[in-house]
Image (cartoon, rainbow, N blue to C red):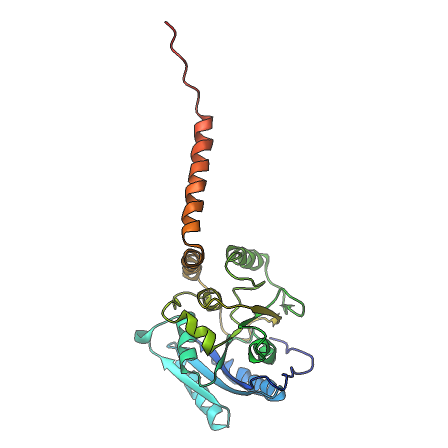
Amino acid sequence: MATRRKGPPTKLSSDAKKELSVVVPTYNETENLRPLCERLFAACKAAGLTIELVVVDDESEGSEETEKIAKALASEGYAVRIHCRKKAEGRGLSSAVLLGFGMAKYATLLCMDADLQHEPESVPDVAKPVLEGSAEFAIGSRHVEGGGLGFEWSMLRRVVSSGAKMLAWFLAPSTDPLSGFFCVSKEVLKRGEGKLNPIGFKIALEVMVRCRCKPIQDVGIQFQERNAGESKLSANQYKLYLEQLFSLYMATYGPLIVLLVILILLLLYMALTSLLPTPRKLTG
């Protein structure tokens, strides 16, 4: 069970924008939607924010119940909208997030997971740099002051996470570039129009690179244990991540990547030829 973030609510500066669209992709998250919504609106109200919650649900066993919960929340006065996407309309987290961004009515956009590993109480903190104009992109990080894990992660998960982060080292100046808890404006997002790849899991990294976000600010968050449901990660998601990395590196460095590959092949060729025996001279 996730533990709630402690501390006083975030206060924005007087000249900060105060409106925020929060986009949450869901897939079998029926147990999490109500507590997420109630905690999110309470935290944002305390911070002086006017928000809407846009839920983009991919068709699953829990879709019908998820829609009922969202509509019940809306009838209770919460600014909640839900789009129930059928399989024929598309699948996957990244495309769901981009769809939600397109539906949002406010100029500032925030994405977070539905499983409560991203604490709703941290939303004002993550949104603050973008709302106040001090950053074009803000991302929740476990690896800066105030950040960390709220539970014990297995060694395997730590190794996999560290390896995936290292592979993105030269793409984005963030300590946690694979976090799905981030904030950006519609104006900045527009730079990536027609370029953003909706396939894969790491939409934050895609937006940071394709939209040329600068500056980027890491915001400390406590990453909590999943409240309910199961992880959506699979071997195919890791494969898609590697494909995404290749595409982003090519887009960022282009010819330099080709030159690097040629240099590596040349060095390998020279190393191999140096190991071959020297031909003997014929004597007559």
